[in-house]
Length: 408
Image 1 (tube, one colour):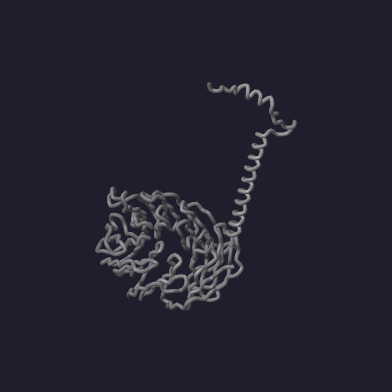
Image 2 (tube, one colour):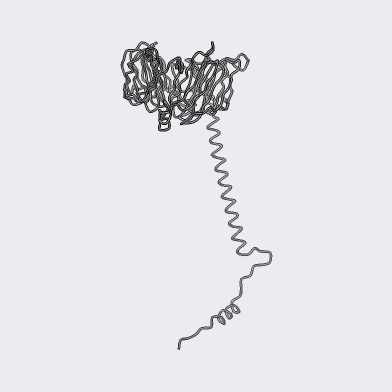
């Protein structure tokens, strides 16, 4: 017969024979000790995390607000740019164009590519790393990127205005007989779309801009109305959404009594327009809508500068704050900064949350809070100043060579 064990009596004997662990009065129990230890670990972990965040924040603030006291210039290769040559930036590269041709120079001063042509009035426009150069009243537009030529557009009609997308799509305003045409071409010169405008039906197109993705086109039309002028800003969608609309029309706004000589996409979702009395902001990547209108009052806008996030309007200023006033808006039309300066500027650049104001003799760099990070004179006259991916490093092109300026 199998043995049957009495576990109940066994456990009872064990309980009687083995003394139970007891904690002195006032001491925490074993479970309480574990709980207290866990609390200590949690607080210690949180304290370390907070310390790390504060440390990183201090480093970032120090980097963001760092002021520079000197500029170290490193001279690069010699370049030839005639007095009639114009220079524009193409991301970190420099594009030089004239009546005889166009070339691209990288930050180290090396000519990456060049294209020869003959033009009477060359005009160049950029978007991203794409550049298009065409001849006003001519028939040819050359499209290239930072690596080289993408193609050539033959318009067959005189060019009055044009723009280019980051995809290489070109929108051109062409002068026809009794009508004005707007054509869209790909970089190879193939026609993607076209429509005509007349002064009677829609007005004369005085400004165009194409979105970076090449799907939206903004046109400013001006026409007479009751003895005055009226401007219409119209958006056309050449993507899938626009195929369902008559003439690809997406949206538009009328501005009686004013002329709107500038329309511009900041990115594929944001655009703005400028008249003689206001700045208008639009949003939307399919059917743009009016986002904000900033009226300038009696102030006259002297210059407009922008990037994909900010628009800056420069006004003459008569107070002791400075000769010029710069108002900066984000892509929603909200004012983010008003600052003053005295430099007789040739350009204002928004880059990497910095504002670079310069002319051929000097430059000033501010952050988006208006804090001056650097101000100084150039060693030799500078034709163009181009930011790089490093906030404290810039490419300078003089009449003689390419230079690298490092701020310390």
